[in-house]
Image 1 (cartoon, rainbow, N blue to C red):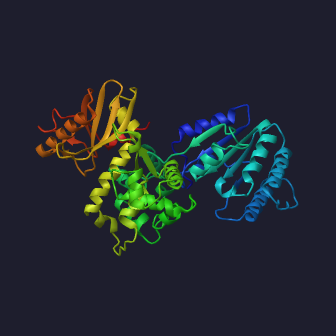
Image 2 (cartoon, one colour):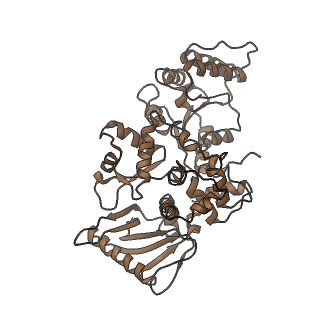
Image 3 (cartoon, one colour):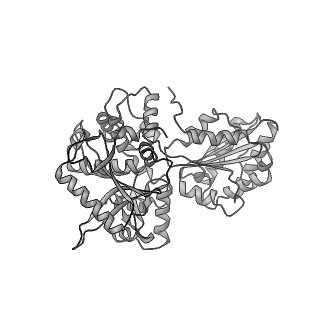
Length: 479
């Protein structure tokens, strides 16, 4: 059974506005591999395109042009076969003739999927697309959809194009992975009803990528699904890592080197730390790799609370990459219940804490709503102070600095039952708060919060210290 379209309301609104406008529209749809870009477009337009072509990975131009000819023959009215165009300029001339032959009253929709594979270096595709738009499409009742998984390429070459496509993009869609609420809805659309702790475990291993989640099977627990999808020889994600980066980036070994380095340090790394760890030179090449990974959603960058811009931190935030490097790469598992055994190890404990923390950082809107501060302007960061002779170090998972003279400090804990604060742990939190106030010199009110899986068990050590505690149910709120 075909999966229904889940969520994506903002993106559907953008497409609806493009469809109902009285001008020509060029819509750029950008998002990482397997995030559902093509499914979104085909679902909205019900697979009814006046012309559609998908680029072929690593294919020479002659094959791309032959593919163009084949797709044009499918939708054209000509009984005789079309001659394969010699170049992209000739191809777009043929496309204009085809679109004009179908009449002028009805809105036409043209869909170019995997554009980076069509517009290879020196192919002339973007110049020809510029000609098509500026000389014909811009004055027609037409929607041109351009779509690509190489997010950085799409932004640099199309959205920020310096040539004939400059400022021609009328609408942009940056398609992100599902959040927890959308993941739950997607699984339920497949008649898979798991409790939220089970869904969270699946999300921690593979993130909110619809294509990955589509492999989850009804009647299996999170542990069984992870075993089957990630560790079995035929599992969808068993060999996905090697394909993932190669499909998106030229010289992808550089991107993987950065990903590997970031996977070794949960607090993230500064640019200088990355240079030291990877032996990259401090130049434009490193900048390009970091930008491409950030724009594609594999890593995130942020400024620690109170630090200057040179202290920008990069963190690995792609769930599957982190999971793969911790548990799958270069590891041989002969048992059928691999994940059940791995989940008893110290590596699992370290990974699960970081993975849960990363997911919380992706759900800041849900956290703010749960605290009834969604309408208050705020900035989110983390806090890290290295220990010194005269002062203890401190790390605070999440800091929300509010415009109403309040700062929320968050401790994030992944636990399989209610979390209990001991006297020792309470003292540790108070020391963290003291270090935070001393280092930042803030005069704002400080409130300590906790985010746990199943909530905080209140006792004499939590009362008066933890102002509010959130659970995974708060993270599943539909924003």
